[in-house]
Image (cartoon, rainbow, N blue to C red):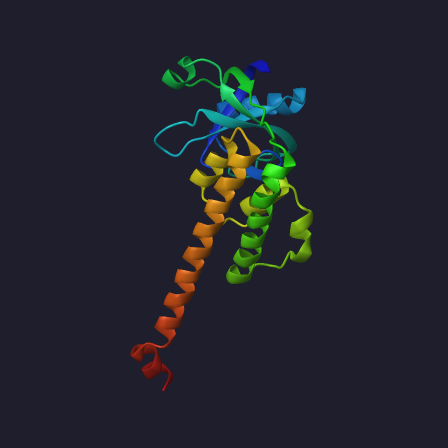
Amino acid sequence: MTIPDVTILSIDIVLLPGETMILDVCNERQKEGLYNCHLTKSELGLIYNDGTRLSKIGCLANIVALFEPKKDNHLELVVKGSLPFEIEGPSFFKRPSWQTGIRTIETYQESSADLDDLRLRLIRLMAILFRVSGSAAVGGSLAQMDINDLSYLLSGTKLLNQTQKQAVLECRSCKQRLALLIEAVEDAICRLKAIEKLGKLYQNSPHMKHLRN
């Protein structure tokens, strides 16, 4: 579906569909566009900017709440992601504007038989991840979660970096998204175990033994 004249906001964080996030905006022109979106109940488009380039795929968002500017004149708002989208036409990236046409991206879902094994593998890995990281236990509730729920949960743990989140956002299939999430969780487990191992080595080092004595 093509939507003309969507207000675009480039930020240094990736928003996923269904995810809720608090944004802090200080640019006057951006604030004007956000006020307009809030008054007209229009969706805005969030695009990830890593400091060197704008991503081609972004996420539409609904403004859940908008608060009056604080003493520093920053505007704070709560947004919730809805659908991934792609900017229409290359001219936006040559000269970025605050409003442009977009095309929403539909994620296609393969048969459940193809996805069940991957989903169960992801759930097992997430259970290990939460145990290693010491995160609050979600227990058996993981088994009841669908792919979107698992994505949002991982995003909320801050264990996915922005590049990994952007890759998840750009996935066109559930199978591809599951494979990316599995890879990201495996990477996070390895990193946490390495940190844990380094901590134990440090605690058992002669320097620490000398301090304890």
